[in-house]
Image (cartoon, rainbow, N blue to C red; front, side, top):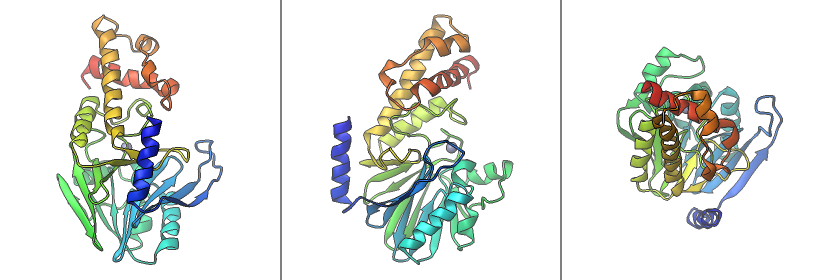
Length: 299
Ligand SMILES: [Zn+2]
């Protein structure tokens, strides 16, 4: 697996001309307790990956301006704008929200002040109306199933797969590079996030199956520390789906034997195949509790 990844990175390097770390400024901050910092990776051909702590987005620099995705939070957004300004003085034209969750999009005002147009799935409007946050501008352009952002000869395709993590998450595709930018529903080599907040397990699996049918070779995921690669081979989507299927099957097997106690299930169910994945020890019991709720409550 590791070898496959190294080969894939090499291929991406060839295809996209160069992968280079433009900058890396580790700083200690109370939240997280680890090197927090931010960095920018130049993927070549105007595509960049910006990382702040364990959050990532992509931005695209074109002759006509810049397309930004998920502005994270005010602090990260200021840092991101500063990094963009080291690369280009072209206007920030578009900001694309991946979904409604505040931890990914609440820095939007920084780019609204730059005159950017905001794009998101239509359900983001309703969700931000229900859970407003002051520094998060409402989208100017919304869509139902698909939308294509075009600027300066570059294309970013947005596709909605229905509910999976919330009800507004879109997957972004760069058709020329065959790269997907996937937020929250694919995090390579990591078990599912804690107790899977706002994740619908069965819809999540269905969405991943549909994503696997898309035309792509690489995945940039929105979560990863400074030690994780910025880009992964397409196989990480299937790996995430199979993990969820294994998790659900393991909980269901015990459930069918009559074990309905979430506390006991957290102790009994193990998935040794994934023992090397990040947060296996810490989050697997929480994942199990979420799946217990799925079978116990039908939720
Ligand atoms: Zn989320």
